[in-house]
Amino acid sequence: MSWKEAAEPVLSRMPVVERPAGHVPFRRKLTWTAGILIVYFFLTNINPFGLAVGQGSDFFGQFRSVLAGSSGSLLQVGIGPIVTASIVLQLLGGANLLGLDTENDPRDQVLYQGLQKLLVIIISALTAAPMVFTGSFLPADEAVGSALGIGTFGVQLLIFAQIFVGGILILFMDEIVSKWGVGSGVGLFIIASVSQQIVGGFFSFSALGATGFFASWYGVIVGDVPASLSPFTAEGLQNLLFDPGNILALFTTVFIFGIVVYAESVRVEIPLSHARVKGARGRFPVKLIYASVLPMILVRALQANIQFLGQILSSQWAGMPAFLGQYSDAGQPISGLFYYLNPIQSRGQWMWFLGEIPASVEPWMIAIRLAIDLTFMIVGGAIFAIFWVETTGMGPEATAKQIQNSGMQIPGFRRNPQVVEKVMERYIPQVTVIGGALVGLLAVMANLLGTIGQVSGTGLLLAVSITYKLYEEIAEEQLMEMHPMMRQMFGNE
Image (cartoon, rainbow, N blue to C red; front, side, top):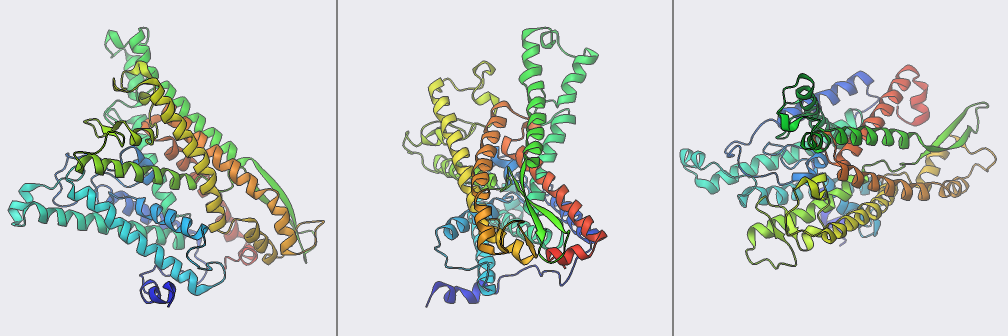
């Protein structure tokens, strides 16, 4: 008996959000999307019952803007389990270990979706457990345990159940948006998380423990700053240039925004003509960032899982060998393997004159750490971009079939899928690798210079790119609403 036959009774019965029977009007899609977004913000502001609020630390920490959710809320795990499950399935699928034909076999499609849900459920439990039961990240309120007569362990079980349910909720919220709304839930949650941080970094007078950008400059304009922080002094100039609400962060934020929008517009357009309708022409765009920046989530999630392992080992293994890593009181690695594998997330981690680097860290250690981060992001970005293109039906073969099925052809070439595929192979693989590597480089650069609201470089890249694609999808939906015949052409009826 194969694993598919053994697992089918379970995987085929996994709960699923039903697909719409026909076309969903654009307004209804917006309603579903807005409704899920409201639920997301609502859940990120609810603390689990029994949690000692204001204590502990964020398990995701510097990766929070990429993995969404909110520390100390019901959505503590964010989209981490969904992303991790995608990494596992993409690696297994890329190595052809699953034996599933998700393109042509409906039965295998059901099994794949069920396997993904099962993995998300398992990973949600495995992610929530160390957060709660180690006591370092989500400490239980002993007073609640005494009042209910269930003790500290009972409260921990209660918190674990709430966090676990939150992880399942975000899974189905993502599925609702993907089937009934606009875009994807994962992308929507990243935009929401990053936008909160950026808006706070601009306007809050206490954003992330420091004044926001406008608050900093308001004090300068009205003269309500100490003499030592005047922009005409060395200390004051450094404060306005390098503190959280600063000029450099504003420059980096605007630069990343502009470069991503520009990269999204750079494309090779392959001309198409309709085989039966004379005069009907079109273009197939192969963008520079062909695989989008979503594969960056997979790369950062892999790095995040490595750091999670280090945090758990350091908190639970008193005799952890020094070569694996030594941690500061703030829970950050300052030496060893986990230090070098920890990506640089802010200016203070490499700019010596800011005075945030521990005395035990030498310049050569920072250079090695940066080189590893660059290699990880550039090479990993290219690899995961290839996986993403192949598993989401964006590769040369799948694209050629889509063009063939739509009735289009490339002028000057025979109307044959194999011929179209050869033309696509001239562009798609190369652009995929270049785009994935470019996004990885931009993410590292943004982290080095810092952004408004202390959003990670990857988080900002994701938010801008996803917003741009969401705009394109909304424009396409509006076009199809105005011209219903186009839905039949693109198979969206």
